[in-house]
Length: 294
Image: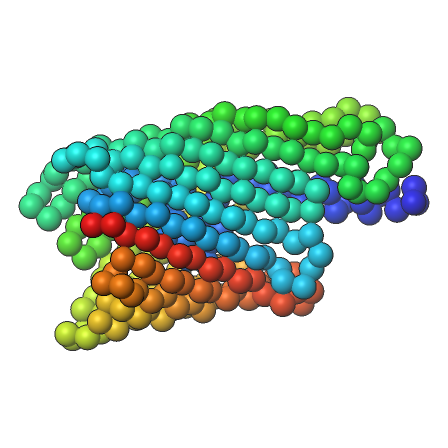
């Protein structure tokens, strides 16, 4: 087993680094339905309660591939105030991480149909790494599991018009050490500051159809810029079919549908990785269920 120690370390480093860059990361194919995960200013923007439950299974067919479980809820609680809560659990190989954040937003009316929402986010991440599951014995690097809590804060702005929105946020302003061990093979990871900018626009075609293009960019120190370009078509505000292209990373097809007088929405997305990783898996699946109480 010891001959394979470098391989296990490489695998562990890969998944830890993957997760270390993912805190409050909108790595959701259906990111428009998880906006308050990355922007606290989104809370209360629709003047009613919204709750989303989602599951994302990444790289199907690969053992111990990333699994993400998401719950977020937000609501307006007054004329200008919104609050929200998001819980995101990531499981990758031997790593289990839960992000728990509360949001507060305040609306500033700029015009009759133009509002600017400013928000703050506070909470943190519970990180657990079970190194015993790696199966490497007699190696001091893997002799002790890791468990820690990293607090963080963020802020954001959300500009909402009649047919468009613009989002700008930094959901994790603090740079925290996530995992660091001394020994023959020291390992470390950290949270870096992240910045998101994007927007979307609804284009009516006729009484039944409309197009809704959108874009979301993410900038993280030391990581290539990530940009999602999305276009979807709506039929009578009941059925949405769309496609997403994440530059030099993946392509996605998705659908959502509203029922019960728009009280419930269901969404499904299939993402195919365009990098070399795509040749070793069967794509990624994502499902959401959204509740609206007006």
